[in-house]
Amino acid sequence: MIYVSKEVAANDVAGQPKLSRSEIWRGLVMKAENALPFVPGMAKCDVVSRSENGLVRDIVFRGEDARERITLYPEDKVVFVRESGNVDGFIVNEILGDDSDLRLRFSFALQLVDAPSDSAEEREFRAIMERDYVKAVDATLGAIRKMVADPAYAA
Image (cartoon, rainbow, N blue to C red; front, side):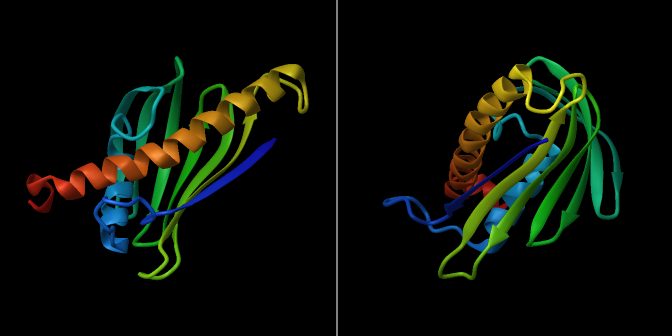
């Protein structure tokens, strides 16, 4: 199993709007519903069902089909559990800190279904996922900043 965690300050980019916890949360909910603007490498993201505290979606990420069950913990975290596909595991997106020091942390514990632990295939997968998730944290904050700057965002 591969474990990776990446945390970044939400408001350390000069000249960018300062994000509130609520704005980051709204962005994470939007990402759960449609990850395409947020996650480089995702080609499909279709919600197939909704519940009181989450949803189920079908995705295509890096050419692979998967189904994810997403649980929303308002203003705190979003948990993605893989239900099908070539990868088992979970991903957590968390908002940390207080208003003066907001941070966004993405963590995952994933395992290739058909590859032995610590195999060359798993090590290659780890390198790709680490790179992609670092990009995903930055892309998510970038997309949220763009939305906050857009007057239609408030609607």
